[in-house]
Length: 144
Image (cartoon, rainbow, N blue to C red; front, side):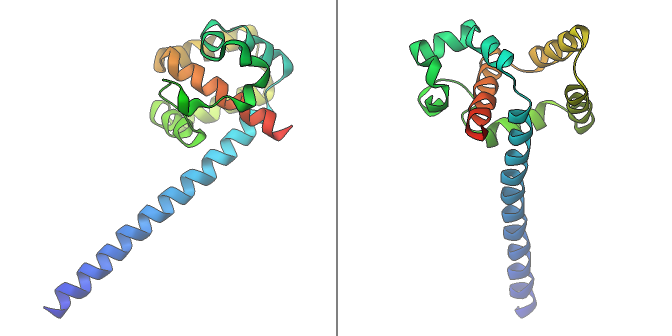
């Protein structure tokens, strides 16, 4: 009986520790990814986002204050950067993410931009893409 109690407590402790490590690592990873994405956003990207009909419809006249836009009050499926990282990691393999990041860091040709955009639109809905764009821009504005 003592062995069963001991192993139950030990197993429960490992499960709890696993959950804590998972949540801490997801927070760390989401911060790291968003910092890198935010650093790569240019003024041209912000202008392109401002002209996106989905974003305009969602934000209306508050486009100038994109940082203050509250995604919690929208119907978008992704509302936080942690959710954004989770969705990206579910939709793309690690190799695809690494390849995309290395292409972006090296500069994208028009053909590579089209390939990347078609890959995104193939795996993510319009609402998910809109939410990801807004989250990335909010992070870029916070880091400026």
